[in-house]
Image (tube, rainbow, N blue to C red):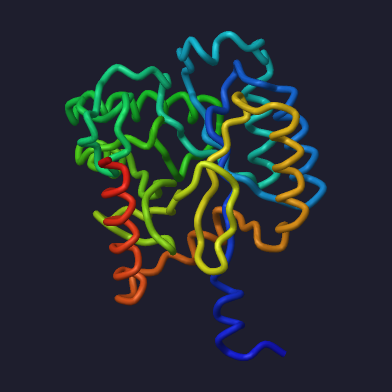
Length: 253
């Protein structure tokens, strides 16, 4: 029997598998391998779907003409389908002034509220047309500004799979689910998400990921489980604030 501290740590340690750049044109060979792996270990990942992909780097891949039926099939498996932008085309430079100081180019940062609202609304309409419910969002290249969050809330989206912290938290009336690393790392305590880009992977990368899933399957959680862990207690707010300041400072150099 676990003592209270060990039990608390165990119940508040986990990782949400987040896959980026899920689109009609993508590396379907590796996606199919991941699906078999997830089904085998009963993993419920979160998939960042691009509803109207125009990204030239993704369009080079073969198109899946049954894409939206595949998305609905994932939804039937209780996988979380998340909005990952609208076109995935970067048309603004952030100059490290975006909300999380990620830097680089952006699809959303720097645009007016009206433009960002329009892009999110158009994306939502496409998902609705395809009978796919959307509860969450994460921007291409992690780049947001205040207009992004206002536009999301105006479109009734209050979950963002991004941010700094040890545990999911609420800020600006939005639930943030921290994404700290560019590789699969399970911390000894806390709830975060991965960031996985299958389209950049080799077979070796997949095998490494497969080993990670096998080793840590008991600690891989679903989006619904992560939502229940949103925590704004002072202790966690202090830790999240500290992590945010450290990582923002690191990114500024």
